[in-house]
Amino acid sequence: MRGDGVRVLIVGGGVAGLATVAALREWGATVDVVERTPGPADSGTGIYLTGNATRMLGALGLWEPVADVAVEIKRQRSANQRGRRLFDIDVAALWQGVGPCVSLSRAQLHRALLAGVGDAPIRWGRQPVALVREGSLVAVKFDDDSTERYDLVIGADGVNSTVRRLAFGGLTARSLGQYAYRWVAPRIEDEPVWSVQLGRGRQFLTIPISAEQTYCYYNDGPAADRPGWRDELAATFTEPVAMMLKALDADDHTLHAGPNQEVVLDSWARGPVLLIGDAAHATSPNMAQGAAMALEDAFVLADSLAAAGSLAEALSGYEARRRPRTDWVLAQTHRRDKATGLPPALRDLVLRRLGEQMFRSNYGPLFAQP
Ligand SMILES: Cc1cc2nc3c(=O)[nH]c(=O)nc-3n(C[C@H](O)[C@H](O)[C@H](O)COP(=O)(O)OP(=O)(O)OC[C@H]3O[C@@H](n4cnc5c(N)ncnc54)[C@H](O)[C@@H]3O)c2cc1C
Image (cartoon, rainbow, N blue to C red):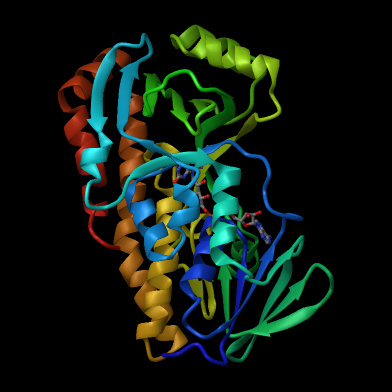
């Protein structure tokens, strides 16, 4: 079906929302975007995109501005909390034929996606406050008291989605019992390596995101922010932790902290209101699949809309096609969290012997096209 005459509202101008704008470019619908923040993000930390994410950026015509600024990551290195090697993965080889793995700052990713969607009509600083079904349409009331009617409303508004709250009976994200701290520090090594140290239920990760910068990620077990976390981090892990913490002490304006949460829903649609990206299926970030799943959602949604005879058929076809993949990622993130929660001696033994094999099997089904 063609989108001519169809009115679509996308709520959220993040990865999923902007990718959907790009994906729907050729379909012919009138697409509005509302984004709660007042303008493009100029802060944030880093993000790692695996090969299935960069493949989708290519398919959506968004790769070039990302490639211009991203660092290609060639290896992922896993060590225990004393810095002893557990296993290494040549990710350039693993994802060969799919796409390169890259990292960059979140602000740069956002700018690149905005550049890629060109003059898309984004209404900044705007959000919905009510969604009401009127026959086949949805009347959306915004926070400036205006109301507009749409054939399709897409909630791409993240893990704590307002669209989900308004249209899905208030279903909320659930806590994974982890709290994550992220910041940016000076780059420490020339080699473009993703490097993690595993402690029990804790991880400390560094990734270069530019010629000058390293993105640091730490998550611990308790699900709340605690004043002593820096001391615990320094006491648990080995270098480069102290160096990275020193950078944070000198300049903590890049520090972002928050709980890791997941979203599990029986269905992603309520009539013509659809959730995509984190709003529909956020998971633990331990597989770095959030952006990839959001980009794949956009691509498959556009494909399903073009192929179906009606909106209802498109949305059910879309969900049937996406579910196996997002369910797979959810299950693997649980397995990974379980493995890192094992007693360290047992975990080290398992990961030295089977880490590489487990890693490959975690990602295996994601090499195929979505
Ligand atoms: C600690 C941590 C580390 C992560 N690391 C990675 C990683 O390395 N690689 C990776 O692929 N994924 C990572 N993820 C996951 C990734 O960030 C998300 O999966 C991805 O951003 C999902 O995109 P999205 O567009 O669905 O949501 P978001 O990126 O959250 O975008 C939602 C957008 O909607 C806007 N919005 C929210 N509410 C409203 C509203 N009411 N009205 C209008 N707009 C609204 C927001 O301002 C935002 O712009 C990580 C997640 C966490 C928590």
